[in-house]
Length: 324
Image (cartoon, rainbow, N blue to C red; front, side, top):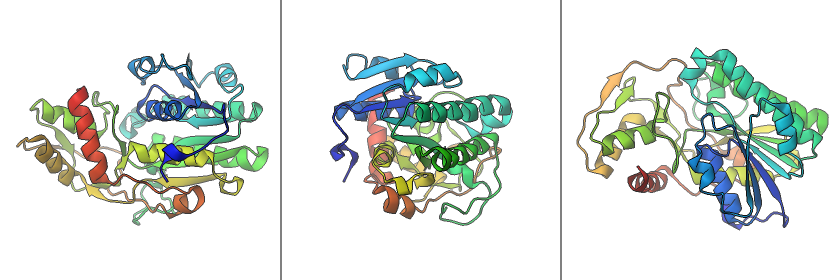
């Protein structure tokens, strides 16, 4: 069963932090489409105003411009909320290596503020974005929860710390928390611009403009690229998960493995381009190979992703052709 058939109590209220971002705005869209109320909290530091404006005519959508680093803002945002989907964070492994203090303030303190606000306000479920980066240098594939290596970046450390805090909030305070370790999410509204842009939208935009993309490293790194609709499904199914499953973190992926160079040439083919890429140095803090075992999420969350890479990338290409 996909997420569109899921049922919540009538009048349920969802708070999506980071709701002006890529994943957050897709969650806001899906939940309002289902007929439930959404509060979007975002400080617009990395999110886009356009991702808010597009929903402002929906009566079941409310936007709060605010920062999760401010506890009072978090407290007010959580009043009367049933489910928190905490997506607000600063992404990018290489940028976190340049700005470790900034990442600590945003990703750790911000998430802790949200956990506390959810606890005080009696929120039913707290679902939060973690990351495949928590596996660090552990070499074994596929990645299995409980088998993590040495962390390779401040970003990864912030996500790992969030998981530990969330586990404590379940154990000490009875707040049902569910961590979602996203594996390379892609799809509509993912930003193709900037030095830290994700690779798929960046490649697509450059190829559409007949520019030459640069691949970091030799292109033989592999990733478990995960289409956005699978991530929406995971968030909403976590909201309906049992108390017994709370306090855990789950791999959220399709369970596939794609090599970067193969993806590049597939995109060239799909877009009718014949452009050889440049190759640059490896990015610091990057994991060479990433592939997820999703059996824990299947068992405890009822997560059964519908979109494999081929299906997802075709939809993503169509979206970028229309919107770039």
